[in-house]
Every structure is written in C-alpha cells, then in structure tokens.
Image (cartoon, rainbow, N blue to C red; front, side, top):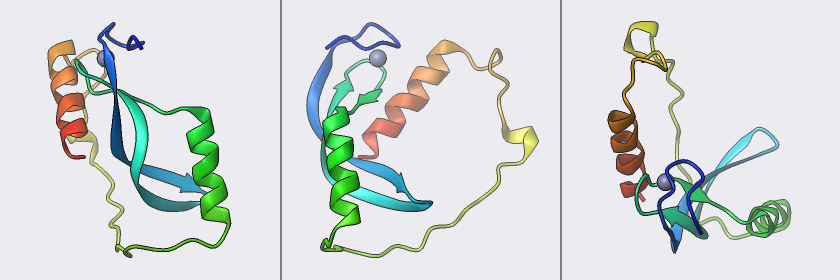
Length: 100
Ligand SMILES: [Zn+2]
C-alpha cells in the first residue's frame, strides 16, 4: 500500500507493538504490519488489532514481564510542531521503526 503520510511504499513486516487494553500496556511480538520504507509509519489491519484484544482477554501465555518507567518530558525538551523540520521528523520516525 501507499503511506498516507509521505506517499512511500509499504511492505509487510512482523513488528513489535505497544498495545493498550483496559488501561494496561502490553508488548505484542510478531505482529503483522504494513511498514513504510520511507518514514517507518506502521499500519495495522483492524482484524489483527481485534485479534490481539481477543487474545489478551482470554487465557494466554506470557513470554516475559517487564517493569516500565513512566517519565514526564519537561517543557524545554519538547519541540513545537512548526520548529521540528520535516527531515528531522522523518529521521525520528525511521529511528523508531529500527528499534523493532
Ligand atoms: Zn511513509
């Protein structure tokens, strides 16, 4: 498919997804997604997301438990939308997608 953000071409990939359900955060591995080769944006099929919800609501195997820190980013670290140039934004997105 074509990326809605940058017009790049996407490809099917298995990725790691942060998934919230009933105020709890889960890390789901091996999730099929369409990933943009240009900006790294990820698209998930609604059926896949519903499938994850159903899996989490029923009895499932937990591979690993993690402790997660919640950190508030102070105002002076944040970029105002118009200050962040498009190139930097794309770089950040790509960096994010490489973490998977
Ligand atoms: Zn894109």
